[in-house]
Amino acid sequence: MSDSTRKTFLITGVSSGFGRAFARAALDAGHLVFGTVRNEQAAAEFRSLDTARARAVQLDVTDFSAIRPCIDKLVQDNKPIDVLVNNAGYGHEGILEESPLEEIQRQFDVNVFGAVAMIKAVLPEMRQRRSGHIINVTSMGGFVTMPGVAYYCGSKFALEGISEALAKEVKDLGVKVTSMAPGSFRTDWAGRSMTRTDRTIADYDALFDPIRRAREEKSGNQLGDPAKAAQALLRIVEAPNPPVHLLLGSDAVQLVKNKLAALQEELQQWEALSLSTDFSA
Ligand code: NAP
Image (cartoon, rainbow, N blue to C red):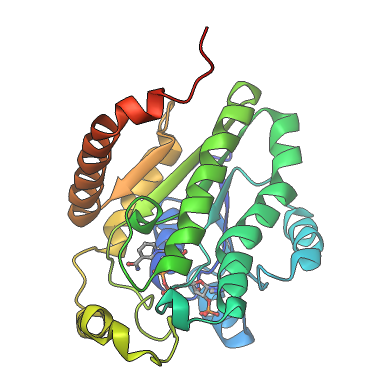
C-alpha cells in the first residue's frame, strides 16, 4: 500500500471482539492502527499483531482529561488520524427498578460521554484538514429495545442521536460520520464484559429470568461474525458516500424493520390526536 492510500485508524477497545477484528482487518489491508487498551498485557498482545503498524496506548475512555494528551502522543511522528472508530463499550443488564442509578451513570460515561470526548479530541484537526471519518459503534439496541437493557439501550439511542446530528453539522466540512449498529455478534460482550445487576423484585421473575438465561446461554454462539463486520467497516471507509446509519446482521435488519413498521402503525393510529395540538390559524 502506498503512503497516499494508507490511512491512520484510531480504534478504542482493541483487546477483544469487534475492536480486535476491526484492527486486524485494517492492518491486513495495510493501514496504520492505533488501538486503545486498558492494561499492559493487552497492549503487548496488540503490538504483536504487527510490530510496525499496530500501536497500542493505554486509555480508559472515561478518563476524559487523558484523551487529548494520549492522541497528541500518538500522532506526534505520524500522519494524522483519518478514521476514528469509537468501539469501546459494554452492556449493562438489569431491570430498571432494580438497577442503581450509578449503573446508568457508568453506562453513559463509557458508551456515550467517552465516545463524545474522543470525537471532540479528533474533530478539530479533521475539520481543519476537511477530511476524516468518525465511526461510532452503536447497536441494534439503539433502535429497538427489550426488557432488562434499558440503561444499555438508552446509551445506544443517545449515541445514535448524537451521531446523526453530528453528521449534519460536519457534512459540508469534509468529515463523514457513520453509526454502525450491530445485532448479536460473537464477542465478549455478553460474557466477561457484561455488568449484570442482581435480581431483587419477584414481580419481574416471569418476564426477565428467561431473557437473562437465554442471553447467557447464547453467549459464544451468536449469529454475527466480527471478522465480517470488519470487512463491512473497511467497505464504508472506502466508500465516497458512506451511510449515516449502517445495521450489521440479519437479526438487526429484521428487528429494526419490525420496529419501523410498528412505529408507523402507532403513528397513524394516533395521528389525529397528534395533529390536534397546534394553535388554530
Ligand atoms: P468486547 O469483546 O467485550 O469488547 C469491548 C471492548 O471495549 C474491550 O476492548 C474493552 O476493554 C473495551 N472497553 C470497555 N470499557 C472500556 C472503557 N471504559 N475504556 C476503554 N475501553 C473499554 O465486546 P464487543 O462486542 O466487541 O463490544 C464492542 C462494541 O460493540 C461495544 O460498544 C458494544 O456495546 C458494541 N456492540 C456489541 C454487540 C455484540 O453483540 N457483541 C452488539 C451491538 C453492539 P477491556 O478488555 O479492558 O475490558
